[in-house]
Amino acid sequence: MSTQKKLLYTPAMYLELERKASERSEFVGGELFAMAGASRRHNTLTSNLVIELGVRLKNSDCQVYSSDMRVKFSEQGNFVYPDVVLACEPQQFDDKNLDNLCNPMLIIEVLSPSTESYDRGYKFSMYQRLPSVQHYILVSQDRLQIEYYQRKTDKQWLLTVLNKADDCLLIESLNINIVLQDIYAKVDLD
Image 1: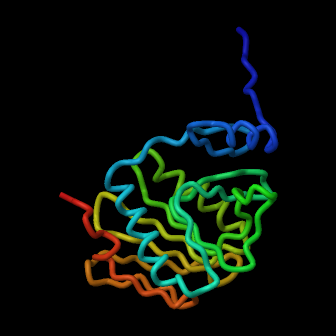
Image 2: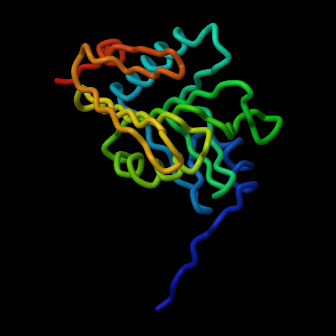
């Protein structure tokens, strides 16, 4: 019986490949994981979130990025693509390409059947190890529901679940208040 050894990449190898690739991949533990295409609901929710956050933050020192901004985890050497990421000044990038954000403040993942357990589990545990991350938001695309995790201490997060159209996603530290019906605008949940 022969065993094949997995091909592991270095972060430098990954970035060289990723910057030339036509399809995006995340880099975790030396392995590449291809990103699947997103559904119409997923794309609509992501767009709505970028628009709503962008409007509210247009006169601030914060920047909202869509799913093409990589987040770098220096400690683990991993790179992932959140659906929505927000960083405030001073933003930190790992090189002159400005495509690997090192200090996100807020991360949003729109849950998909294929990624939900990863977003709730391992990916969330990576985000928790980034001291800059203060807010983690999971958005369901199958029902009206948002789970908002707010960092209280290094090891303690407060969870708020929103599931009514008139519920408000309130992010006090950024002076943001968004009604769920605006986040779910044009999303058919039937």
